[in-house]
Amino acid sequence: MLYLIVFLSSILFSQPSTNYKVLDSLANIQTNQIAKTLKEKNKNEFYLNIISPYNPIIFKSNLLENFNSFNLNNIENSDTLSLYLIDYGVNYLSIDDDLLMRHIKIKSMYENSNFFIEHKDTISRSELVIIENINFEELKATVPNAKASYFDLFLEPIVAVTSGIITLVLLFTVRS
Image 1 (cartoon, one colour):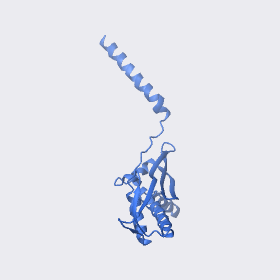
Image 2 (tube, rainbow, N blue to C red; image 1 turned 180 degrees about the horizontal axis):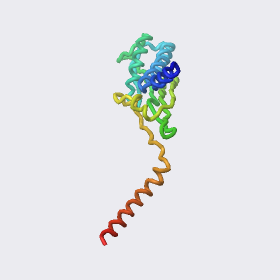
Image 3 (cartoon, rainbow, N blue to C red; image 1 turned 30 degrees about the vertical axis):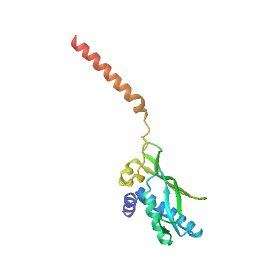
Image 4 (cartoon, helix red, strand yellow; image 1 turned 90 degrees about the vertical axis):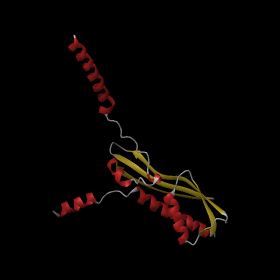
């Protein structure tokens, strides 16, 4: 009985982390590294300019939070600090009919310093509803279609064409 309870509880509580939790933790780690690098280079006051094709709300909030903890000041009339956000967000790759590879990554660059962090895991298609957050554009990604089965590729069109032919034959034989 005890084994059954442990087994059922492991199934119930083994849901993957949400995209928000994973991206937030990755952003926190990377922005902490960026803040340490700036502190080492004695850059305490600057105007932060994030150059990115993305809308990195989670990344920006973590960056400003870590700047505050390291006493780094974002002042508008100071020297401009250009931080390039090169790659950011969530991607899915299809493994088989039910499984997807989730790849969350952040790649940024400041002067000669490159920062890269990523997270990869496997999730099922049914868990997409649980892990995605529709409030943040950066947490959504295009989900690849499931691989078509033998039935979908060959038998389904054959059945559709055959049923159409049979319908036409019956229509004309009943009329005459």
